[in-house]
Length: 114
Length: 112
Image 1 (tube, chains in turn yellow, blue):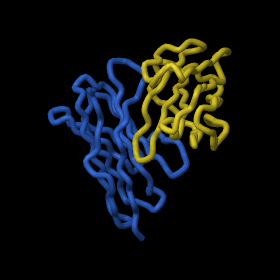
Image 2 (cartoon, one colour):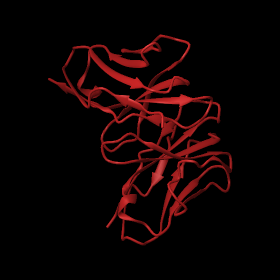
Image 3 (cartoon, chains in turn yellow, orange):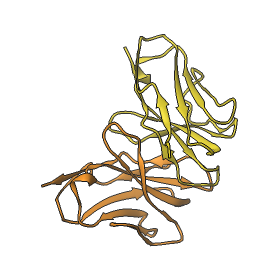
Image 4 (cartoon, chains in turn red, orange):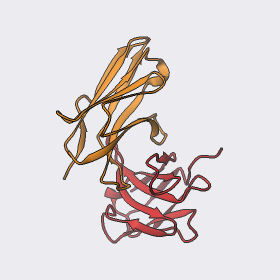
């Protein structure tokens, strides 16, 4: 079956611009996660959705970052006033439920802020 | 804060040999550990997991060992193949929470 998909695969933007990154989880998965991975590092947690609500957003670095999941399926990570330090690979993962520990990751979106 | 870290950044092995990747964790409250494999340009792929009430778990060609006394986790890959070349991460989950805390990764290189 189809796995987690993310679009775009690559995004180059100028400092100060606004970007949206999209995640399509595995069909039927109620839990969705966003992580950020810098070069040579492990992924870092950003936010976790259970259904439509953000159950844990403690990893969002500041108020320029926001994520939504209005219908409990597709999620969008939004970054305002991008900075060069936001450059990273943004990974999305989904799991069957919030109590299912196995998270399935998408290929990520590589964001480059120039 | 608490962290999960790895001993070696790069491990080179000959094809057919066994590989051992190590990981140290600092949070004694961690109750679930996972190993992920990440190939270039792809997201992490689940390999095997282990709960804190176990000390060993085996999968297909992989074994995870957990030593809670010294807070150490290892991944053993039997008969390493070129397709095993990737970065391997250990990650932990604490207190029933849902966010994974990853280490920095070990690059496994399989030499022919």
